[in-house]
Length: 258
Image 1: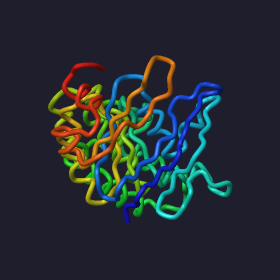
Image 2: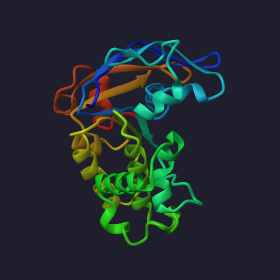
Image 3: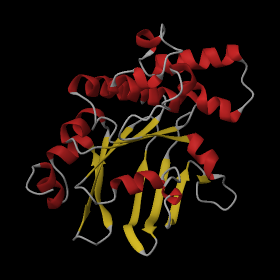
Image 4: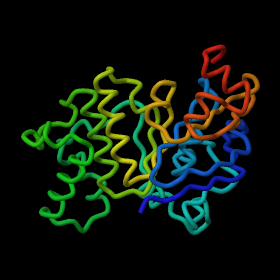
């Protein structure tokens, strides 16, 4: 079952630099939440705190809480690797493993976990590729390199790889920024389908995309260069784009800054 995320008082650092400050929000299960805001305001940093990827960066650390239902992801007893299985991530540029086939790309996470027989792997690979709307396009080339697919297909392959390990949450960091309009539309359609099973959080610089795919939108901003990013407001997407509560949100959406 897709899970709810509750963030409270979250501050993230790169060594001594405070990148984002005191962020609190709730992300509802089986929904799409979009993060928008100007470059450098901490959207991607915050996204990476939700599956403990931020601490992989040298000097990266956080203060505050990220609760996945009733579990604190930063609890002392929590394994960060297990967190990243539960909270999957799709990156800005498609990153299939270049030396692996389409099949092995999808199966990679399952093989790391061990214990899967070939028949079970076959089932999961097909189910994941179908879930990513890619099966019909690649079923006859499963054992050819994933890097031979088009950019849009590679991104859907990465989504298939992410959902193969059955995460509860999918994080997407500008997943369409490197894609053409047709591939972008395919990913957006896929996001709409996936939210019936997953909690999805997406960072995007495309206002139209945020309006199209998300149920709720969070606007981030920073007061000045060198200041930490802050959450300005979060609300239903329709309200954010038609009647935001904060003038800065309206200014950003209307293109008056950012």
